[in-house]
Image (cartoon, rainbow, N blue to C red; front, side, top):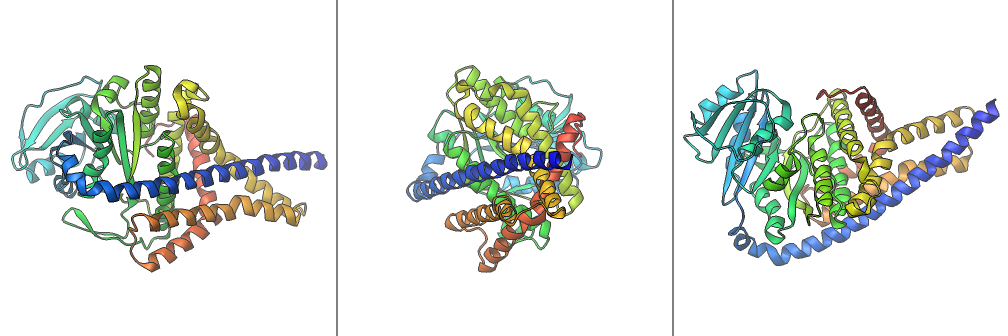
Length: 459
């Protein structure tokens, strides 16, 4: 009986080794692509940046959509920072999603909001709109008060009343740098096939903000927040930049993305029933354009920045990762028919399989691999060769990938200016693979279980 169990475990160990080896090959390939793409982008900036002002002279108007629910504490500061964004033609549309606190009253008072008329351009199904206001202080600031329908519904209301060809979806607690919209819109000007363009998200924890813009970049003191700084660098520089290079981006962060209004409306807007409305929309846009043979581009630009506060406790971080995993499943499984379908090009043949195998199934394989690893050590059946090989593919290579993401950061925009920042992040890159990564996998397994139980709650 014991021999049979050990044999089964050994077979599974081969599966785990293959998983970790192929995963790291994927990640190293993506990192190399990211390096080549970043190098090309930096050279391009040297040539084109002096002409950006001329380019922006023909920039299309943009509407900034800010959905908010019970944001009384920071809604004023957030909107004030948005009004300072430097862009030739931009409207700010604040959508109050049935807040039960005094968000609406604060907005009306602070910006002298008066009842106004704004024509409805599209007709996505949403909860009822109660009233529309325009600021007497800022003619480009509008407020829509609606019944509560959650974030996707609020965004759809914003889309319905958006008067511009482009809109930018942003979280109310995110802070855009003043030139971020101008930078992220450039792909739309350069290529009419562009339907979505996203920028990079960075951790605001530890940074200093004054008058709506960042004045000092620093690392957070909280260790969990530092882990997230490292994660974000790896995800955007080692991940999304590479997927952009091969034209197979599946995610544009809901905290900062610009969309072509007409194509989003044609595809049906944001889905109300999903917990991951940002990724779900991107996957559906790929499917819509592929099904209808529409030439399109979904871009990631590595220098426009949105700063956002990250969770600082295990409980809130665990809830976030649970929600992210449910959002991933909500995006991939309804569109599983795209898997290995040549008509969806690199998205169907490369990106969808990667996310299905390594992001959906990966956490369970990883956790089981660690459990069997320690089980074999405890019963004395783990050879030294096995232990070294497992640690190499499961831990050491992960550290190397994190360090490479730091190299990309240093070679590009160098947003963390002090040498001590680099040393601290290198320390984080080492220790995050011993405990934190495994904890993340556990949270994602819980997220999968929550999805199977049809949990659609935000928390």
